[in-house]
Length: 181
Image (tube, rainbow, N blue to C red; front, side, top):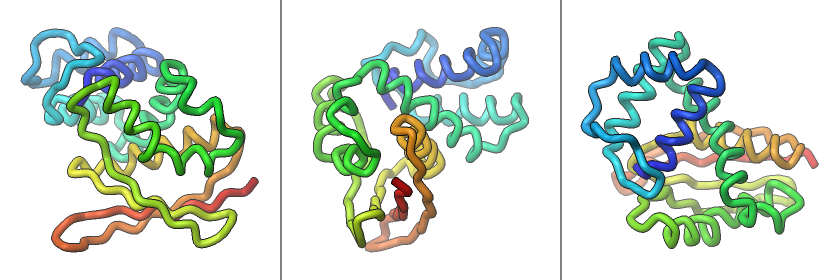
């Protein structure tokens, strides 16, 4: 996982719980990485899961809820760093439809070696979008939080539900989104 996500996670903990809490969490973690996380660096997924697990325990928040909150926060931090990704769009649906074909392509250029989720899209009607999400990481709650962040950013409402299923021995999650614009 890229260091930028570690940095955002650290900022999230500091902003909501304080730097002392972050330091306590990191002291309790058994991490493979000993040096500070740097944005373009690549670090073990196990380090992120260790930080999330320890944070969840320390803050008495279940892991899924922690990931949702982190996802919302992450969306805003990514928009701060990369405003050009969202500026051309007036509504969340049109932005979300560009994530795999535009945003992820640009992220790959900026952070080589990034292992991003893969999205496929279906539009059952004007106010709906189905995002089929595939990633070996299976960060469904994080994705839910990112979608919530998109709704908030565009001052809109997105109803979402998820369907997790297996196809050809791979696990997918369909995010069924309904836009109330």
